[in-house]
View 1 (cartoon, helix red, strand yellow):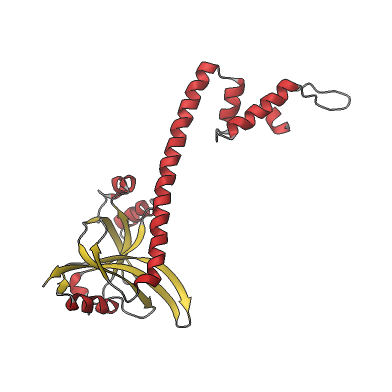
View 2 (tube, rainbow, N blue to C red):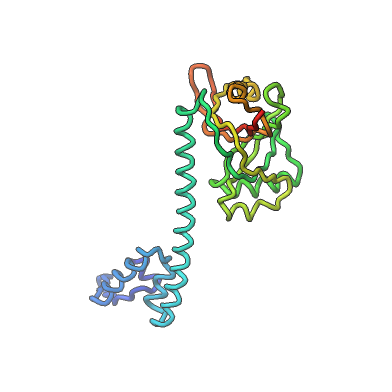
Length: 250
């Protein structure tokens, strides 16, 4: 109450002898009205402006501005909800798709990598690009990229970030950045692989290549994917990856 009085929302008379403040019905109604506007997520200053400073005509403008703010928040939370559903689906695939395979189109992505195996590549340009990508969380994903000639015997895995092109707000921010690659969807073999520290991720793709061979398919491009989760078990640190291996008919 004292705080709102200092902000000028109410100005009750004060008994100089006792120090008591005396609030009348108008003061109490104004306090309720203040809570009303705050419940719409108007700021403290916006709420007191409407109640103490703005005419009803001016208040319409303030309300219209806040409608735009709320609409933007709704759009943002819709996107976050979609991203959370994707994340949930990826986690569910850990148990469903280890050692199993299906044919599907890979995601439509933009990709940027700044790491080869354990070594980060951090030129001045890469630092700037990395910071811009990181500012787009949580809509980006921790991605991997394995050139076709590194599967399964190679020793290079490129790591960085990816974003699905349906997240247009992020795409607009990163598509023209240096080192950003567009990865269009392709017919692929999809699976989840499990890897421990010290294991070569490239070699872990062999079962997917065997599945291809059994179905008259062959690897037709670079492998993409992302890290779903990192965990610990009796063998140590384990990581789970969703991967898509482009597949073409033999």
